[in-house]
Image 1 (cartoon, rainbow, N blue to C red):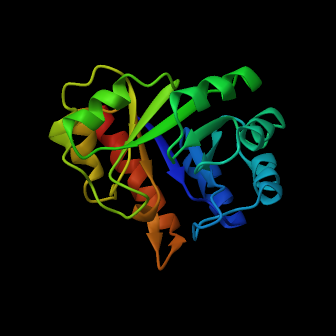
Image 2 (cartoon, rainbow, N blue to C red):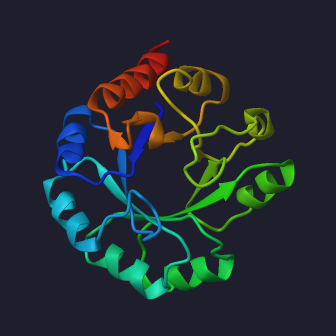
Length: 202
C-alpha cells in the first residue's frame, strides 16, 4: 500500500480533515520563509488533536540541529524532514541527539541527484522537484531505484494515480496539489487519498 503524506497543514480545520481522511503522515512546515509556516507551539496544539495513527513530520530548512532534536524529543513531531542543504554530518549529529526517524529531501534533476539520494544515511529519502513549487520532475530518472522513497513535487488529484501505477513509491507527499487559493481544500484532500487507495487496489 502506498503511504500518503499531506504537508503544510496550518489550520485547525486541516487537522479535522486529516483525522477523517487518515493519511499515514502529515507535515508541519517550520521554515519561517514559507507561506505555510507554523509555530512549534501551534504544531504541538495540533499534534495533540491528531489521530494517534497519523505521524506528524516537521519540515526544516537548514535549522539548527538542537532545535530539530528538541521538537522531536518533546513530542511535537514524530519525524524530521530536512529540506535544505543539510549534510551527512548534520544527520549523524542529529542522530546523536534523537532516535526519531530522519527524512532527507533531494531535488531530482539528473541521475547524479538520484545517486546522491540513494546513498544518503537518512532513514528515509524524499525525491522532489524543488521547494514546493507545484512542478513534477522526470519520473523516468527514478524508475530503477530499489530503496523506498517519498515521491513529491507537483502531485495532485489528476496525476497521482499515474504516479502510483508507474513508479510505485513507498509514499506520496502532497501540499499545493490539495489546496485552493493557498488553503487546504478538503474535497481535494479526499479525492487525492481516494485516488491513491483506488490505484493500490487494482
